[in-house]
Every structure is written in C-alpha cells, then in structure tokens.
Image (cartoon, rainbow, N blue to C red; front, top):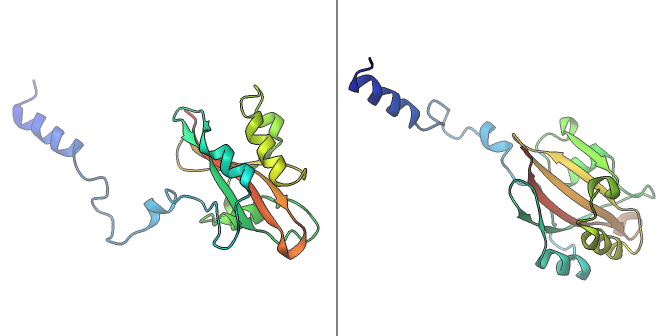
Amino acid sequence: MASDEDYMAFLNKANEDPSKGLARGSTAPQASAKSFRATQEGVEVPVPLVKVCENRDYVSDADMPFEAVALGWDEGGKGLPDEEEFARLIEHWDPENAEIEIMDPVDWDRNGNYKEVIDAVTAAGQGNDVRVYRVKREGVKAEYYVVTTEGKGKGAKLVGVKALAVES
C-alpha cells in the first residue's frame, strides 16, 4: 500500500514545470510552436479573401478561423511554388526538411464544405491555378494554405487563406 508521502511525491512530480532542466533561453521546444507567416508588410490582401475570412472557420478537432494570405512571390513564369520555396515563403524554421504536401483543392475539400473559400481564392487570383499546401506542425497539428498567384514575375503575389487544423 502506498504511503501518503509516496502519493505526494507522485503529485509533485506530475505537477513539475515541463521546461525544468532546459537551458534558459533555449528555443528548441518553442521553435515548432511558432506560427507560420501569412502576410507580408506592403502586400495587400485582396478583398474577396478579407470577406471570406470574416465568417468562416476550418472544421477539425479544433475549429479555427481562416486567415488571409498575401506574400510577395517572384514566380518567374512558373506559377505556384514547390514545397521548399513555399516553406521559405511562410518562414518555416527548417525549409529543406519541412513536411509539406501539395494537394488539389477538390481532394482537400472532398465534401464541398469550403466551396466559397476556394471560389474567393480563385477570384483573388483572377482564375489562376489554386493549390492547397498542407504544412505539418507539431503533434497532430497542420496548417492548410489554399493559395493562388496574383500577377506575374517580380510583382506577383501569393494570395489565399490559411487555417490551423488539429487532426487526431
């Protein structure tokens, strides 16, 4: 039979600060918790995206609001970025090893729940191709970016929306 002292030791251990023993100023555990970039100073968010983000959530284990995406993107005539280029655009902490999956919007929205979101992104890009980038985060979290390009060359932008998903 466990004594009261054993039980108190167990409770004290369970309630310890999880960062105990880490060097002060250590950034490793927090690095993966950093939110990825969605907007960039000086890059205007198209009106259709502002409107769709006002009243839409992405439904997962934790319903989260959509956020507008507007980033400068020198697309160089190739359209949308590859996985590593995208990781750099969103300021991923490890672009070369980022776990990013590129999806077709139809595959991402199999049940048609986000048609108005995809339509808003399409309108913002004036009919350019739309892609979904699934960016793995810590644990069961992922961020979905539904994006397109607006413009061509050095003056182009990557525009769309993003949402955090919890997928257990």
